[in-house]
Length: 376
Image (cartoon, rainbow, N blue to C red):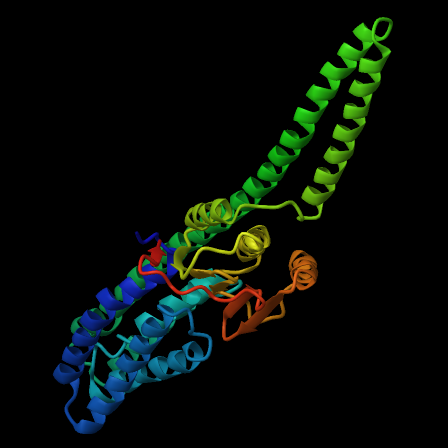
């Protein structure tokens, strides 16, 4: 079963599939209609191509290097069309690139929008210097229509940008909520450990008080059990605080799937074999810590978890290009995995982040015929 990944990626790709082909067809039709020579066609086609390039790269969230050159090209094609070719549709590429860029500016977006509309109108009005016989027609074809298109596309892009921003904020809230769930689960584990112990201690002390004058031997036995119980609870609390409490890998795997699903991340699990019982708990700790790190530090859309008899690997995309903050939880786990004869590997490359724990001393089991791949 496939779970939805981060909303931005699929929606942007869907926009590319649904918008780029028809916009390209409209642009080609406009060029074919307005161009009178091959030179006219080449320049007008360049403006259309620049606009489509920005739209196509936007679906991959990679426009930083192309948007400014494309804006310059499309802004230059419009006066070329007005004054040279007499094309009233040469603004086509500009009304793709400009409205895309304006909502993403850090400030002065309103002024930029006014400037773009004013530029489109002013360049269109320059056509009056070439054709003074039909002033109303020129104003409609070169000023009114291009200006209206610019206004509509700017408004649409502002709405579109706001929509994606809201979705991104929702995803961040989901990730924060997932981390909070982890903290609540820690508190629940702590309550389970100490709450049970305190309840038993209370009962034994009450019993000891009743037997204090009638059965000293039984009182001593109850107090010894209380001391042993308190000591065991202290040990369990330390293990829980330092992430050393033995975990169940199957339970952690199901929990990780649920957390990733809540954050809108697609998960795929490859089960090559059941983990050896001697490393099951350690692998569960690695999975839990990695899950928390992905939710807190990455912008992941996909996670692949591979399980074998002797190890686990978790690969996610969306890793930041800048160095990640110190992951002290993984550093502690690396020491524990090493103390148990294993190796913990952490790698970051090309937007991908790998966390893998392996125990070479365990012989890989033969992949059973029932081995399966769980997709979410």
